[in-house]
Length: 377
Ligand SMILES: Cc1ncc(COP(=O)(O)O)c(C=O)c1O
Image (cartoon, rainbow, N blue to C red):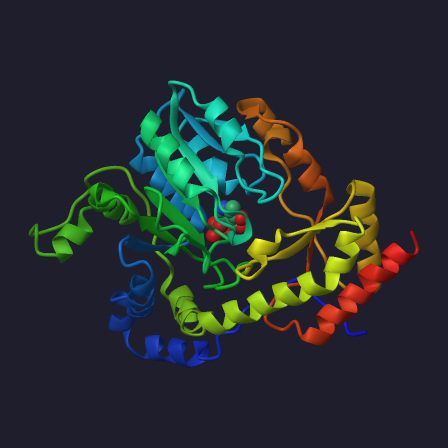
């Protein structure tokens, strides 16, 4: 059996010609030729948001934290089952991360625990859409409105996902999407910041441009640009935008391929899941599942044994987030509200190979191996 990698880098066949074009004319670099093309494309999908291409989703989250004027003692609610970037941006400005447990069906925030976690010091809720599955944004919006909180969507793995017909990232006050090489649509490294509350657009532009009013100058609103506040260089590198552009043009094909893979895995693993060997992604999420395909085994020993069995048979499979509330730093500075779903899921979740080069035959071969593993038990 041919080795099957967990992920494979996304291709950008036109990158070489895009680079040659940029290299032939300094003004194309200066005027951010490909960033402008990417934004133009993205504006069709996210028509009601103010968009900024960033060097990473991490950078986008840092801009959001600055927009909220966080101070020491403020609290930000977020899942424990997420990547450190969801927390770092806010912690960097002195806020306390309040980690909340997940719902076992969706692996997103458990909203009953979210309500329990709210105090007079709470400033915001970070809704991380796990592998693109939408959080309950309707109820979250109502909670935020009741308590005067910001709603932040961490849709790092959510490109192509929707909630009630609206694209993920475009629904909360702010959102981020990641175009890292590990994501399904990639700039090699990059991100998208979505400002959905127009009141924050001007200040976001300033933070994004090293704390200057450069955009106001470019729009002819001021005769020169100057330093107006704190900020940094958050822009996407133009070479990354040159890579991303083709990825966006073909993104629908990429998403379709991945949705098909999800359905293939799901159909073929269903039998074993029904026998209670492991649990799968909820049926109603499969048709729109684009970032990863996972199964949840009975416990950590079984997950690790299955991962090793796949590895000796040349198939790479990986676990995912380690609970932030159990990490060294998370324990030192954070709080946790919830039960043990986060821990259990983190210990027993295994992500299967999922990328553009996976074929139907690969899925069949992987499922056969999983069947063989469970036959022997
Ligand atoms: C939930 C979540 N948020 C934020 C990030 C950070 O994204 P980036 O690598 O683009 O900074 C990641 C990265 O995997 C992530 O999984």
